[in-house]
Image (cartoon, rainbow, N blue to C red):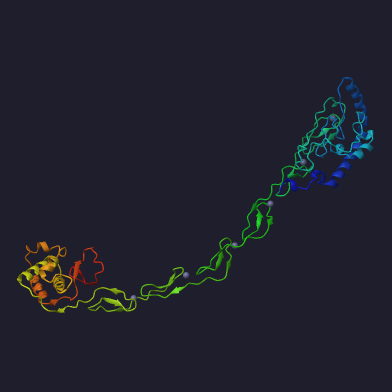
Length: 431
Ligand SMILES: [Zn+2]
Ligand SMILES: [Zn+2]
Ligand SMILES: [Zn+2]
Ligand SMILES: [Zn+2]
Ligand SMILES: [Zn+2]
Ligand SMILES: [Zn+2]
């Protein structure tokens, strides 16, 4: 909205009835004042004569705007001379000299119906031809000091002009100022008293349409067009389709997509991950000599298998083999239990029996990178129990028939894919 949207006509269209009444009233007042002042005017005329004689040119007000007066011309109705200057050409031509205050002072009825000297924008359209300024007060008219000679006849103060004495031009009560109403989004500010237009319409302050309201002026609340569509967020397991802006909902939640509980996990939603209930827990089958404790449902294993010890064919061996194996058992597992030492001796014998390793006790024990203690065997005197365990193993009495590797239970070394069998003594054993 801009100034061009304001209806043309300006303040002259504001309150035609009031204007007319005011004008008529003012006219009556003026005529009665004129009569009362006739006497004063005659007296003034005497003074005027003097004025003429002293060469002072006092010119009457130009009622019709032909630029020949001392008072500023204005058709806006906002100055103190409204009633006179607003008179139509017709009224002016029929007005007789005795009805005018300025009787005797060069009064000449103006027959010019068109006032072309207006400097006030009355149509509020910026046509460049006018300056849109407020009417200015009349130039001071103080050629004559009539103070002592007359009672001031005040033309009341207006929004912009002080009261002025019609006779001597003296200023009285100050202008009281405009009383603005507005501006609003769509209309300019207007003086409630005189109808003068001030600041233009402020224009609407639009905000975009949302799903809650159409395009809307934040100042006056005026709306335009339709609401925007909702911004739907997809439904979830627990929430229906929901507008992210206003929270409106549509339809039903999707509901969870439950996946059954397993041995180790509770029932779980495959969409949102919510769980309910508890894991079923494993259904254990006890450890055997071939496998540790095992879940019959999921196949998980736990703990140690049972050793499947027993009698196998004795190796061919001599005293050196006994001493060598006994020293190895002593160096590797002297701190272990009897079974722990037996299991270490068993690993050596199982390797001799296996096709993957050397087929002699010496070959197995001194194989590259296998037993780090091998270098100390020659200088070690094994204990009697280690000698007995060594003989037992070489004779084919084994703790377990499949173990081929072991490591200290305190070692963090990984055996990779080797299959764990059990812990005995201070070592873990693998096949
Ligand atoms: Zn006066
Ligand atoms: Zn005003
Ligand atoms: Zn608005
Ligand atoms: Zn919404
Ligand atoms: Zn879910
Ligand atoms: Zn299970």
